[in-house]
Length: 114
Image (cartoon, rainbow, N blue to C red):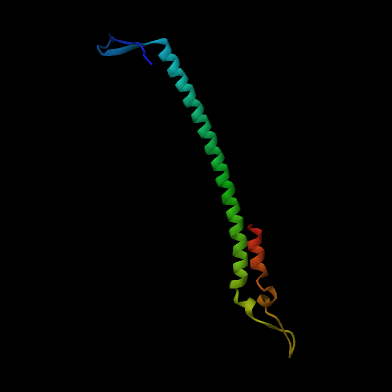
C-alpha cells in the first residue's frame, strides 16, 4: 500500500523542534481500522480472562468439596478404633466398624466424584 507521508519541522516557542507528519487519508483510515480491531481483540481477551477466572473459581470449589469427601473416608479407615470389635456380652462381640463397612465408605466417596 503506497502512502504519502510528508514531514516538516516546526520550531516551538521554547526553541525545540517538533516533527509534524501529514498522512494520506487512506493511511489514516487503515490506522483507525487497526485501532478498532485491536480494541475488539482486547475486549475479546478480557471476556476470555473473566471466563477463565470463573471456571478456575468453580474448579477450586469442586476440588475443595472432593477433598473434604475423600478426607472423611480416609479418616474412617485411619481411625484405629474402627478395627476393634466391641464386646456385646460375655461370649459375643459386635463386628468392628471396618468389618461392617467392607469398603463401602471408600466406594461412595469415589463414586460421588464421578
